[in-house]
Length: 222
Image 1 (cartoon, rainbow, N blue to C red):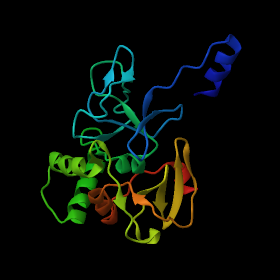
Image 2 (image 1 turned 90 degrees about the vertical axis):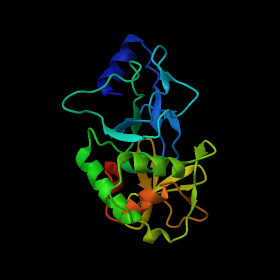
Image 3 (image 1 turned 180 degrees about the vertical axis):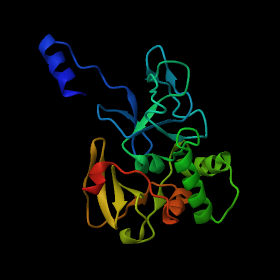
Image 4 (image 1 turned 90 degrees about the horizontal axis):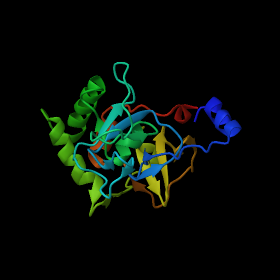
């Protein structure tokens, strides 16, 4: 929340508005937090516009997208109608770990780069967006919950942008080291991951290894 707004609310005795449940974690969970993210996106319509609360389902479409928060000078009204439900991500690595992929409408250049790397990494060609969505949908869910994958290589061999889960914590891989994720950003993580699991879907991991560079939160680069 803006500092001026927070001060004004404090002076007038007004309570801070409760954050909406619309922030996605690397595990794919949707939580409520006041911290903002670099990207928005969606999984279809999964909210009630009258109450601005989520429905019981967590997706209604196999196309899980990562979109710009502002496109051609316009921003969407969050949960304002019966259109797709606006979700938010700390950064693109978080979104990819949760099973999303770049949007071909508002992020066409990035989406084409992702598709090129996805094709190269997965040994396929001429794939359509729906083909990627079908593979990702199988990879990101197992009986309705986040699908995890065994960590079979050393940390230093993982591509930048990959994300790991260790218990309830998640970590971003940058230059062979782990940074611990939080809704507000990253901080220095463990030097080794024991018994960790891969959060990033295998096909996306191969796209990262083939050269796709996701947009990372500034805290990952300090």
